[in-house]
Length: 134
Image 1 (tube, helix red, strand yellow):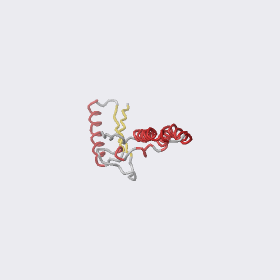
Image 2 (cartoon, one colour):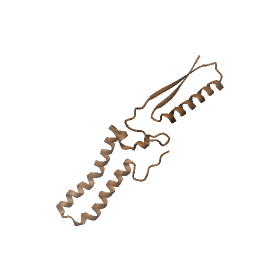
Image 3 (cartoon, one colour):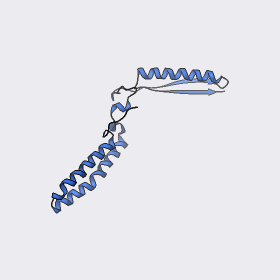
Image 4 (cartoon, one colour):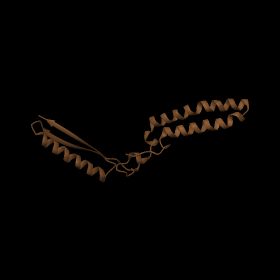
């Protein structure tokens, strides 16, 4: 499991920007004239919601841009965005009359195979489909 440093998540960055703006307002607002204060106050009111709106628009249209490539990593190896992902399905077919132990052994071997392949090719996605028919 990867842990993120403080301030590295997208919402934390929004909070840092908004907090910086609010802190600068605390220091500079008393020194401004009345007309300048009005413009600056509207900026202070509008900037955090605007930043949050941009975050959600980005999240909606391009969610992968908000996280570092290491979030897609498997076993600590980073995945290149240019690297092609492959998808494979491993099919297991069993008869309804087969003992549970046989099915369990087959699933165990399939999982071992998938884990071994995942270590060798971390960008691929593998699924196991188990069909039990009469």
